[in-house]
Image (cartoon, rainbow, N blue to C red; front, side, top):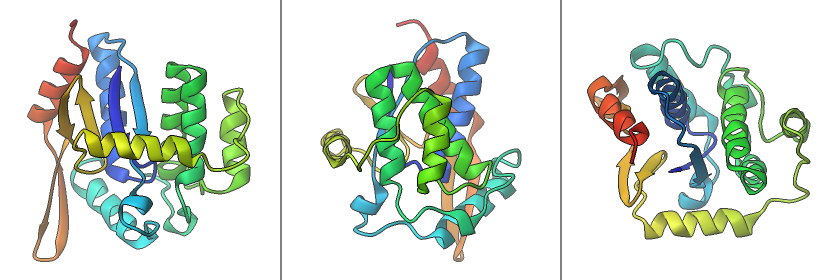
Length: 202
């Protein structure tokens, strides 16, 4: 299993997971992605605002992922990501593969369908699609445990992947700010090296 520490509202993570899942299918790999909570609103001390995320989405569309974010809507950005990460954690407790599916579905709803994944009715739709109940409350115990584990393992930001004990921060993208403008490029060589290591027999 590949550990990924990430926030569900991080667009860089959405690109990384989508690319990696597609490459896994090409390589015939079977490693499951365990997407654990790296709650940026707790890391930063406040919820993420829609505007900087929309800037990241625009940069990704322009330079790295023109095929993604088709219906992203900043007006439907969730006020908090904690309920969505609670749902994902509950899915992983049921089954690892189910947890991966729910993690991907949450991101698809936000970034590809333009839905507010903090809204109870949206979470209910996602939960129902996977035979789950929406947790009655935010599971801070699970979220805080992942956050603490991420800090212990040296997580730099969202997404941070681990193959065994070795960490890889955002292995598919090159991110920089030039003259105040965000630039994000896809790094095919670095991504391919990471994917082959992730899905080769060990």
